[in-house]
Length: 117
Image (cartoon, rainbow, N blue to C red; front, side):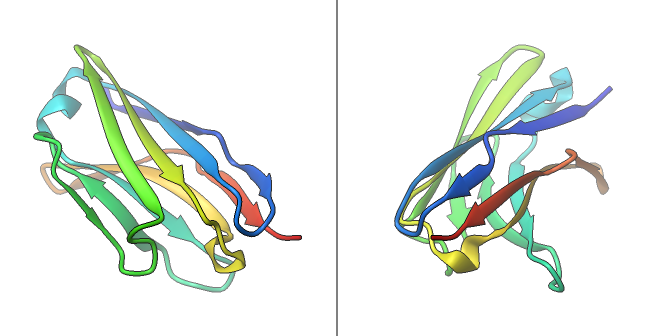
């Protein structure tokens, strides 16, 4: 059973920081990459950051140098974090934690991030 629960969203001023967390349960998750996506109003969901089971990371060009993804594996529970710095209004979106396991996508409920003065 895979379950993903995001937290940490909120309202922040441009240039500020937020840290998102994804509590992911399911022992199988330690063997798979974990991802953060986001979806802004009227736009398609886009991949923001990826971290493999071995800790390698990859980022969308729009967030490189500003966002950092990390993971903490602890047996059946994994925490995947997204540290977001130098936030811009265009980062405003609902952020989703994701795992793709044998071609099946698992999603959390999402957490709203709003960057506005």
